Length: 185
Length: 246
Image 1: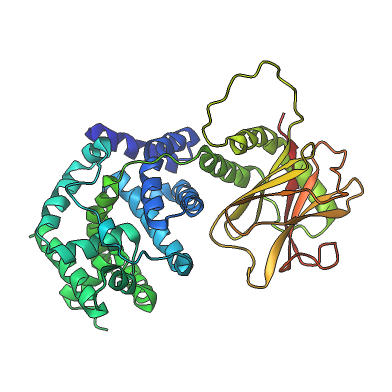
Image 2 (image 1 turned 90 degrees about the vertical axis):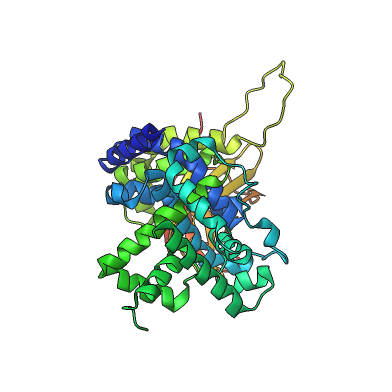
């Protein structure tokens, strides 16, 4: 399945040259992954659609800034989407209700449906992260995953996890530190 | 804050990518990144690792209208490098003619997309009655806001779908109003546009579509609630042709 990453990489290179057909293929091959993350973070289809549109317009204009050392192409696209969603959340979050008890929504590594193709494309990265995630304490894992998938701030995490702000900050910081040590000992 | 402490640098980079680094701290960090390649490396480390988390979600295909809007944006910017807010009606018309050729094909595509409702199983119709097709247009009043508009004179309904996060006006005190130019070039209000999402509303009474095959639509910046005079009072932010989706 490494060919998929290679194909996406080629499509990005051709997109950077202004090849619209390759850009369309890139969109077809990747947009459903980006959209899924955007819906998850933004909760509203109209916001997710406009964020998706912004992402691909940015990719069209800036495809040449992608370099293989920025990671697998799909991961890079996901990063573009996620930063866009974070920007939108900063602007719009006051309109979003945070569920009273959001702990149940944190991603459980055992249960979540995974997309086999995406998993194969970026298998190495997912595998390593997944293993390292398991080494985190429950609260650390939940706070990192909630921040990732919901785009929560420390305050929002504290509200969702019903814990003091300082405690939540420490969960996130310690969780990330542990991940860092595990991912690159 | 001292940014030389390696653990602090790692921590800030991780929280920047995760998104929990906010406000001024985030702005400071972004500034720092520009001149610190080692820190950029740390950010890349996290982008590559955390980026894989998103791929655990089940893929979800976006509606085709998203691609249509992207396709339109990249082609419109190539074909029509036009002033964003032509202030005079004559200029609107020049623009309308120039842009209409590029828009006709797209118009049909957009109309088809807008017509796609929820997936409903339909009993095949025995008699097909020809319905007049609506006019469609896409207007970008500024920021990254775009309106896909559909006007159906036979049903008297106007539909607008909005995309974009950065509005060209402050909705606290202002709004965007849609206009159609009649044969003499006089604008007639078609109503206040929705700020987000999509909306459908009846065409105001007495407004008829002009005889032109590509009537010109315009969006102006008005006080909240719409123009108090019945004519545009604020700047015209954009204008462009509507085309029949044939």
